Image (tube, rainbow, N blue to C red; front, side, top):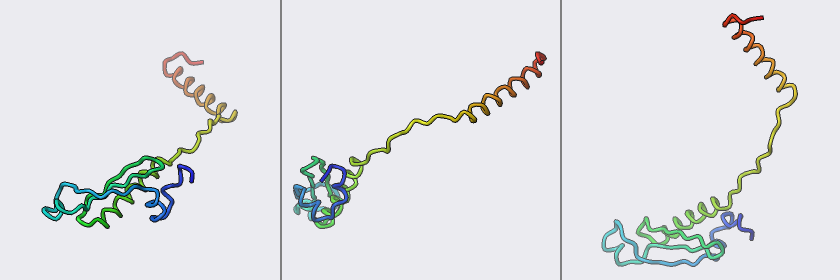
Length: 116
């Protein structure tokens, strides 16, 4: 698959491309969190993107969180802005702009007393 479409894969297919590591993470949760390896790190092997889920006390919830973060990261990396196309004002719009400038210049010249 091309580099731009990884975030569109379903969960199983995306997880198959990842190295899933469980580890202990510090933070709230006390003894349960300190003893159990509930934090999850996903390393997407094709792209090298790494994310962690360590917010909850459940490994399953952390895996879901990490997968969502991985999707967002891959989506941001896949974004390509649309090409910019130079535009050119039409002849009529140029003429209108110049006519307006001439009218303003005449008006100001009359105010200064240098009028025609």
